[in-house]
Image (cartoon, rainbow, N blue to C red; front, side):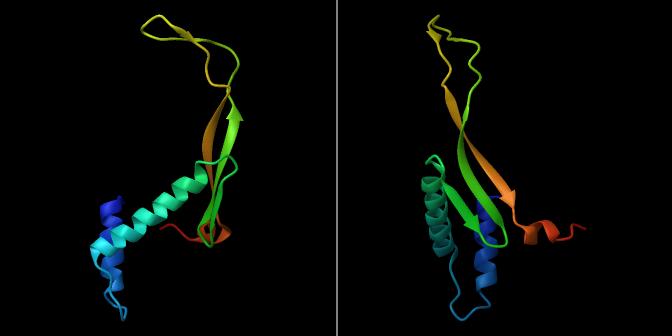
Length: 100
């Protein structure tokens, strides 16, 4: 599922509520959600926990100290000493869901 499909699905499911959302409104909410997630996870140690879904964590891990990078221009560069990774751990509730 991509973002467009997600927007359409949420807008369609909101039609049965007392205040349905338009696709434009859903898109604005998702954009704000993704911006907040990006801001939090761009910091080292950033953590986002979504109940019954999972935990996203931002970590800095050391790079291998060996090797040098030589660019097409012939300039020798040292690799960065660390890199950021995002780890996702699923919640027990999501793991317990059956997949048929």
